[in-house]
Length: 131
Image (tube, rainbow, N blue to C red; front, side, top):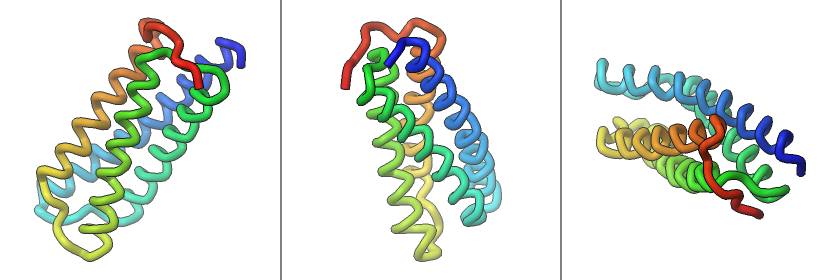
């Protein structure tokens, strides 16, 4: 894959994660302000956007390589996705209040990944990590 195509994929992934992050902020606000779980539709949209971003990053890595910062971002986004799955299936699905520590851990992993992806998109991502 051409470097321009790879960079375009990273840019689109960054937009998808930006939208997912906005949903995440809204959900965190509902959870911590009202001591209740956020609406299911926001959680599903958040997960869908994040999953699309992860898929695009994984494809870019597999198809031709991405900057090292983007590869680390992908790994951290996968960790955040695992936390999100636990939040959804073990708590939200069973109508139990989302534990604050797990919500914060999920957010910290996702924010770290997002910052690394932005570093890669802005051109300071380091060496290419091939797939």
